[in-house]
Image 1 (spheres, helix red, strand yellow):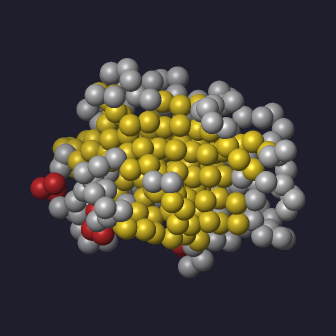
Image 2 (tube, one colour; image 1 turned 90 degrees about the vertical axis):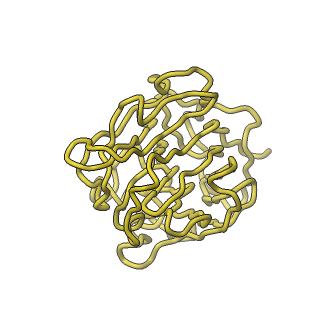
Length: 265
């Protein structure tokens, strides 16, 4: 594991307060043109719908994910790919950047158009709880946006007890101006006691670990990794269809930075 987190992370306590380091413990500034840094990013590949009936084939082609102009550019393209009619990319830091607690900061400019579904999110790197997968091991959505509802940015967490499939999802949303024209900073502040989701430094959703929570409510005590992707269509992104005239569409990422959790003295 390549992250610079403490070997023994702080344990929850109502008496403890936390802050975050001022220097990143893991980062990618996307300064080297070409394919994304293979020491930091791998790929999820395939055209099987990803549990959401999505319409893209995720590839490792440079046309779908490359670094240029100081940014990571993920591009969804209307083209035959695999058995589907769109290609895109889904980058993952699993095994190359896995983190327990911290401040996670991603500066990005989002695609637009009906049928796009970009996301900046995190999944557990170890699946030790319950069904050994989703939702039992948790999900942290730092940013989701669906093109048919332009400008509304969502932050959510998913667990066995709290998820959209059973109508108990925990999350919120906020309108962000110029979401596809300008870069905005999407952040998550994760401590042993709470997860907060922010845009441009302003928190709009906080999920607190309540007394009595077990892994079913709070599986967020194990390392998680980043996922950056643009989905096409799907159960949410495709609710109002897909406008194929909009493609290609890009999500541009200026940087990804992780600041370590520090227990206040």
